[in-house]
Structures are given as structure tokens and as C-alpha cells.
Length: 452
Image (cartoon, rainbow, N blue to C red; front, side):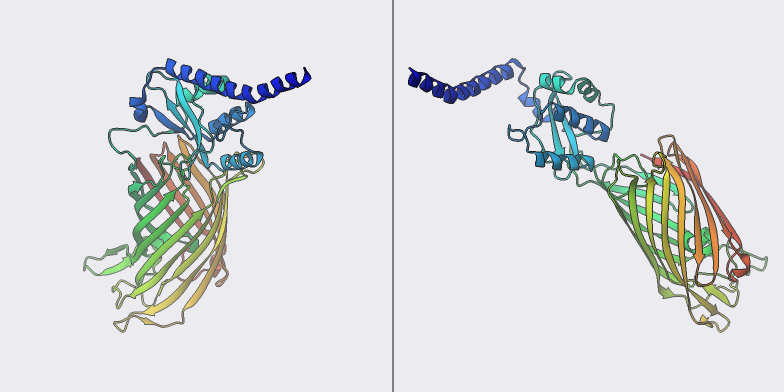
């Protein structure tokens, strides 16, 4: 009798899981057949990617607490869950949602990697189960009133998109005229812009006072276009050409005798090749600072002028080469400041030449001087839909000549459309200034920005 009972128990242990699995498949088949079959519309069903980092985390927590994550119909290991959590905190995963064709219920919800669009967990394809697990979050997902990217298939290929940004600022104009993406969900963006620059703040020669203008092309890489920070880019490359520019007025004889808007003894004396590179850390929503940025730039003489206009004083000074390296910390949080603070510092170098033009050709009459200028800066900034502003101060010290400048900078734009850029430079000790510098500089520009 005992052997018979033991045999029956063994048969039950072996057969029961098979029967249960078959029954589960039969129930699933019946359940699927109840729904209206819309396979012919599957490729054009409304589909979108949730990009709001807070909502993505909320969905993750709800599913995790209900043990709803599966990989190959099995619960993921602790190591895999730890890895996925790190990816979530780094903003590397999103949630893909697909809506049923004939109503507004969700047909599919799945976590995917932004890097290669591959799934990181099995998809959940039962809206009744989704409602039970997600609760009120299910309704939030349906409304789509949060940052998201619509990836529904259209009649035409919509992967290539163009967003134009025209920034008319006399100090730093920039016109973005072309963009493309390499992301399946269009999360990143490569931008091509025309840029301009007058002067160099880091060597205390803003706008027209340096006597040169730079124009060229800028390539920008945005790793996440949904970030609410217009100043952030993962990296950027500037390539430009620098030319002398003169602001002059003449007498009735037609001869130029007086210069305006810049130092009367400093002039551009040739053409330069300009380049700049910036690299930023990944945007961090949870850290004490949103991101860090390294920058290096240089302007190098490639063509020397043979002569100068008669309005040019004799002798005169000229800066031919410059190099600047910088490190910035953006949107840092101090004592619960909601990431308002910016800090930075760097070091600049420029040469200085003194020329005479009386012989008909330029002749250098003094040995080249090297000027080294370290600087530090701090301020506050915020990028909002209504108000985008930055207010701060900078301290530059020329350790080679023994003088320094305090710089006040302010930037204000309303509704990302109209604003003003104002900068004030004041020498710390006027008695140590060189003959080609002023005691103070005031520069400003209106800002008109158009996005379409």
C-alpha cells in the first residue's frame, strides 16, 4: 500500500507541472482569441518611449516591488537587477509603450536600452496585469503629458529631423542650420552651426577691443535632446578663421585718423586659424553637480600682414597667438540650492608683439612677450521655460605683467526668445596696466533667439 501511494505521489510530482503548463497555455490562447485581432495594424499602432526620468523610475519601482520583471520567463538574478538599476540611475534605459489599435489601453510595456534599443527585460503584454501592478501610474502613462518620443511608424521615414536654432547675439552669434540623429529613438542629435566670436574674455579683451573677429563651423553632439538644459552638450568642436577688424572714422580729407570702440594701440596684424574642443560628463540628475566640462581652445597665426593702414599708430601692439584651457562645474547644489551654482577656472596664454610700420613693411621692434593669465569664476544660473539666466563674476590675473581684472557677467533671456548679454571688466590696479589696455570695458548685446 505504501509503495502504491509513493508511486502515485511520484506520478503527481512529474505530471502535475506538465498539466499545469498545458492548462496555462490553453488559457492564454483563449484569452488572446477573445481580443480583436489587429495584426495588420501592428506596425502603425501608437508607440512611444517614456523619457521622463522620474516616471521611468516610478514604473521600475512598481514592477520591481511586484516581482514583475522577467528574463526568458524567469526571475532575473540579483546581479542582473543590480546592473539594470545602475543603468537606470545613469539614464541609460527607457520604457517603450505600445497602445492597442482600437482603444487607449496599453498592449505592451518594455524596458529597453537607449544605447542599442535592445530589451533589458521581457515585455509585459497584458493590460489587465499592467493595471494591477502599476496602479495609478498606468493612467499617467496613458495620458502622455510627460517628456516622451513618439516612434510610431508613419507614411514616410521620420528618423531624420531638423530643428533650427538662430541665436543672434553680437558677442557670440550662432546659427544652427542642419542636424541628424544616430539613435533609433532620436534621443541624440548631431548639429552643424555657423558661429562667430568677437574678442576674448579670458585675456581681458572683450568684443571689439581685441581688434579681430572669428567665424567658422561648429559641430555639436547632444547625447539626450530631452534634457531641459540649453547649455549642455556632450561635446563640441569649433573650427574657424580669425581676421583683423577695425572700427574707424575718417576726416573730411578721407584719411583715417582716429579709431573708435577699441584700444588705440592694439591691432590685429594677420590671419589666424581658430579651434576649440569641449567635452562634458554624462548629465547627472542625482549628483551634487549636473555635469563637468573640459575645454581647450587656441588661435594660431598662419598669415602675417605686410602693411597696416595709415591710421594705425606707430609703434603698435599685436596679439598673434592664444591658448586657453578650462574646467567648469555646472549646476552644483550647495546647502539645498537646487543646483543653482556654477564654478570654473582655467589658464590662458597669449603672446605680445610690438611692431613699427614706418619702413613701409611691418618690423618687430621688441622681443615677443609671453603672458600667462589664470582665472577663476563663480555664479548662479537656471534654465527654465520662462526665464533663462546666468549671473556671475570672474577674476583674471596676469602673472607675467602683475595686473588683474574683475569681470561681471550677466545673461538673461525671456521665453528663449529675447534678452540681453552684459559684461563689465574693471582693472584691480590701473597703475600696472600696459599701454594697450583700458582701465575698464563695458560690452553688451541684445539677444534674439528663434527656434523652429
